[in-house]
Image (cartoon, rainbow, N blue to C red; front, top):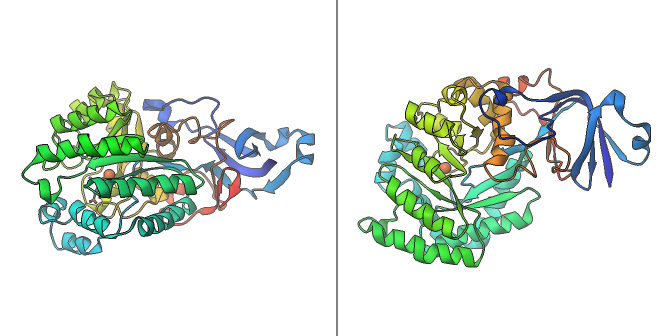
Amino acid sequence: MKQIIVNIHHLVNVREQNVLLRGTSLSTLPVIQNAYLVIENGLISSYGTMDTIPENMLLNAVVTDAQHATVLPCWCDSHTHLVFAATREEEFIDKLQGLSYADIAAKGGGILNSAKKIAAISEDELFEISYERLYKLMQLGTGAIEIKSGYGLTVEGELKMLRVIKRLKNKVPIPVKATFLGAHTYPQLFKNDHKAYLKLITDEMLPAIARENLADYIDVFCEEGFFSVAETKYICEKGLQYGLKPKIHANQLSLNGGVEAGVEMHAVSVDHLETMDDKAIAALAFSDTIGTMLPTAAFFLRMPYQPARKMIDANCAVALASDYNPGSSPSGNMNFVVSISCIQMKMLPQEAINAATINGAYAMGLQKEVGSVCVGKKANLIFTRPIPAIAYLPYSFGENLIDKVMLNGLFL
Ligand code: NIG
Ligand code: FE
């Protein structure tokens, strides 16, 4: 079926070629004003300005009037933990009363709290609640997503989470990438025997995951009190033996060499980056690893924001993601991620939109399918309510400016 969308006010992020954007190229957001867009079998097949529509094209196609909506590629959220059994608002209260993220983790809350809940829930129920969460995110414009395990921390628990992610992959109309995060924290049982837990990851979890083909990437929470740089490298090397490339949690709470380790291992991305120094920025700038910033985690935990300007100016390739999880970012709303990146990290609207679309697609290896308006890519598109300018999107934070979301050429 051929569809034409006419009367698009701004058609945003139109690109003939795929390039991972870094430095000054991040601030170039190609836009066609007063545009049309043609979609065939769910894929973008051509576009142009309204005054150049070939007349015969309108005859044989289903025509949709965008009524001057701005149309942009759906958000590509390259870092989430959206499969979880229960929210943790009681810890939110603890935090309001003065406990830190590390204090809560130390008293058995945090990730371990979520792990207890994963053990108690059935796979079917976990799937249902995760599907509902993901559906809500699609309505908020997310058109490709990465989801991690990491609240199982046992062979059965990690497999349960990854099987749920696999079921989501098969059910939802957007690309989903699965990441194995068995090394999220040391479970209680292995508190004093880290070696034994590493062995469980490498000798039991990884082979079982490979047998069922449950993961695309491997992740480690490289952080003081969690997994050291040496342990991170060890786990990632084992993951690579099963074809899982690393995408790691680095430099969130402390400066511990996680970014440099990720760069050394050619990680697809190093994520969080609240705590960065010039050395870590330089290592990232001269690498093929993407720096994925998670500003809503910094916002929620009241931590310093990621030094986006310094990283962009140093020529790092950066992406933006939501980190949706019950502990540090209980929202997967990428519209807010884009807003806060501009408001708090001084990213330009063009930079934030690029970082949350095409660079996010790269951070999931999905750049050939999504992330820009490009011939052959999926028609996964956000249609806004009428807005005066693209900058109005991040400026008008908290307002839902999405009118409709299209996935594979169909309105959700
Ligand atoms: O990305 N930092 C580690 N993991 C998650 C939080 C996990 C949790 O608190 O449940 C994050 O922020
Ligand atoms: Fe995370």
